[in-house]
Image: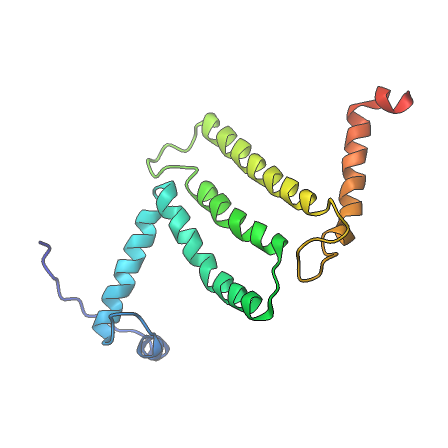
Length: 173
């Protein structure tokens, strides 16, 4: 069992006011809140050490906005597939990126940065493909049903230019 060590700190008045206003489950006194903040900081620090922990924290980061959004969608009987796709993609990609370099002091390995590059590229293209699938029809399930199709043409033009540049002989025939 760990021993409690008394620590005394002085904080600016605005920090003391913030601490007094801060609502934390199971913490009502300033000392309780400081202990809870330290425990949360330790959990976050340790969470960045492994993918699963970081993924959990990334989900926590987007949860407040996502919960408000889902509540509003439910009350309004609407849904946005583009937003849902991004909400699924974002925590996983963030966790992958933040855990790309283990906390072992060895960050000069070319294989590590190449793996990061491949992983990021794979994730970005998976998201692009998901969004492109939403453009199969003129309207998709979104707050604005044409939000994807209205933005699709410039993307398709770039893709067509890439295709023609990579396969010039196919265009000639």
